[in-house]
Image (tube, rainbow, N blue to C red; front, side, top):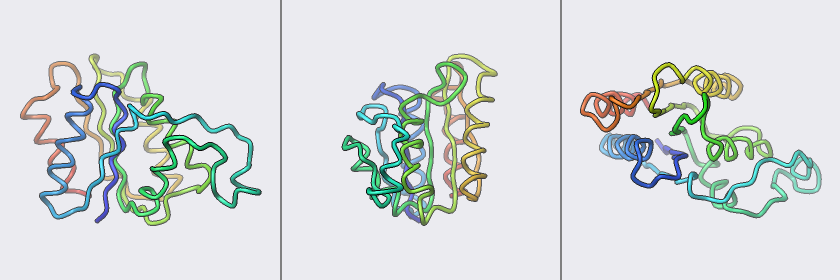
Length: 171
């Protein structure tokens, strides 16, 4: 299976990046082709709602930024993993920008499954991000493979690694 991971933290060695890398290693060990896109460090503008993509653009966005390199990855992805820190009750803006820019294609055409990795310093802050993720999976009519969260005392632990590895086995 072709797996695309969107890693949304701007911190290269942070907790979210660690979870994404552990997922990548586990999925590759299971025989999947995995691309980890570090959207937290890319320049991706939000959707302008200009409708160029649904008119003259024929499905192509008018904006020419780092998202251009991601469209071919979305076109081939059979599984999508969103990995995001939770700063204020939802996924980071960097992940949201990449997802919202898919408006021009509506849905990745080969996508069958999704999974979510979240980290935060606080417990009980995940409902907004999980709700948004499940709404996207429902709208795209893809299987929700599951969610792994890690609050401060769970980050970069063997227990969290085991949960991430188990989730990777579901895609």
